[in-house]
Image (cartoon, rainbow, N blue to C red; front, side):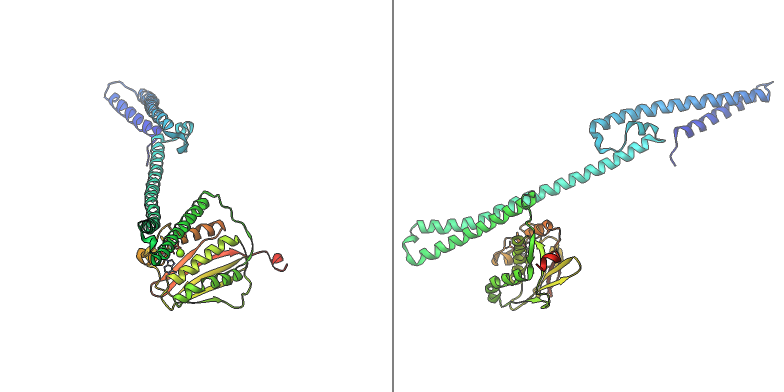
Length: 350
Ligand SMILES: Nc1ncnc2c1ncn2[C@@H]1O[C@H](COP(=O)(O)OP(=O)(O)OP(=O)(O)O)[C@@H](O)[C@H]1O
Ligand SMILES: [Mg+2]
């Protein structure tokens, strides 16, 4: 229980009145009415005196603290000086507010530290990813300049390798630019009516070669949903589908299966890409959407990934007001899924 200045003043005044009247009873010839008058006057007098003293001291201190807070940053506090003075226990209120303020600041500091760590890691990753293809292309070109250019067998091969490294570098820089533009909101989604089923079949034709190389079989289900009309940015959703399907092929076992599944509810189409590959260990699951994050650095590297694909997927789907979800079981496979708004019925029948 918190003691208000009035309660304290009341208790002290009562004690003072009780002590002074009890002393007075020892004096001879004192009548009960005298005792009553002395008791009452000392009670009233001390009550107001104590109350006044407490309030002067408390308010002086509160005022001082208030001024300090004012200097710190008033907008972080929910209290005004008036409401503070009116409080029953201003010191406790002030203490609570300071506690909230400190907790808030602590959280801000932790977030800043996390951001700083993220920035440092990002910078290290970018420089590493840029360095690798530059280094390779540089090596081939210098070898050619140092004389290999005269060797007809080597010349073409080295030039092709240098060009491949530079193509990789170009793709990486493009991905980075896209990501940063999406983060700053510079890219607006260009929403249009789009038959996602047709787009997916188109993508499968293009990915046929890498699927065949890994002997991965791909299927679209169910057959009855031949038309999947969604409102989306065609180019961006194509990027999403390519990355999800490519991942399902690249990170699958040889001879594995990939199923692209469409379903619908009243407002949306649900799209999922499922594989029966090795799966993603649970401790990596919520990190795979970070830029440059790869589960097995060496395995992914050998399959040509930079780890930007899913970060881009996440941003694109955010831009569509949707979210990507992932479910994975080790040795059973992985499913990525998301929803898109259905295109207007009227437009479909056009
Ligand atoms: N279907 C999947 N099965 C198993 N692991 C996966 C699957 N999809 C993604 N991963 C893991 O998540 C990581 C991140 O995927 P992401 O698409 O972001 O990058 P990437 O494929 O390595 O490179 P990029 O897409 O930029 O070419 C991959 O490196 C891989 O380790
Ligand atoms: Mg990928």
